Length: 167
Ligand SMILES: C[S@@+](CC[C@H](N)C(=O)[O-])C[C@H]1O[C@@H](n2cnc3c(N)ncnc32)[C@H](O)[C@@H]1O
Image (cartoon, rainbow, N blue to C red; front, side, top):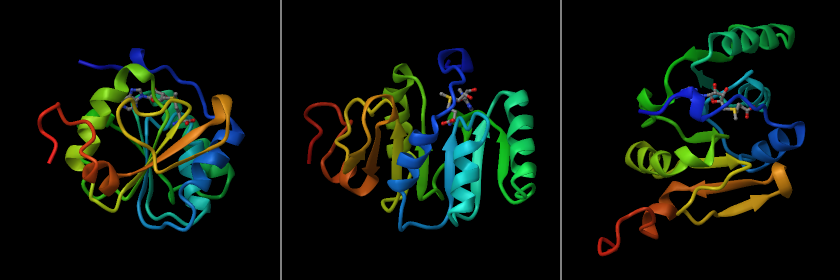
């Protein structure tokens, strides 16, 4: 259905990583980057205390690069990079999610996240916002802008439901 061709590897800028992490400030527990690229966001999340810090990525070369970067940072074996299709991962135990994916896949991702994430989860989107969700807050500008979405609020507002289904 969807594949990596739809979502090319473009690493987050240093400012974008900083913005994503600032929107997760004060939170803890599991942190997952969906489509983790070279692993930079996962590594930063680990450094900031998230446990476990997990990246799902399909490209085996990027997984090797992620592990190399983790090793260089003294974090090898402490951060987890897994070769998995993000569409097939069950996210029901994830409280902190970051994504930087192509706008074309975001409508479908909204549906998956709403179906699986717990109420306490916060999702941070880098560079491209979700199409129908209202963010709780955002930070930065231009290509470094990032948006935070609290799943409980998104659910309460009945976002991403077909018209006529609002409670
Ligand atoms: C725009 S890059 C973002 C990389 C990283 N999250 C960052 O912010 O630096 C998107 C990544 O998602 C990966 N990707 C695309 N589709 C995927 C899928 N179905 N499952 C896992 N990873 C996927 C791509 O290989 C690419 O590395």
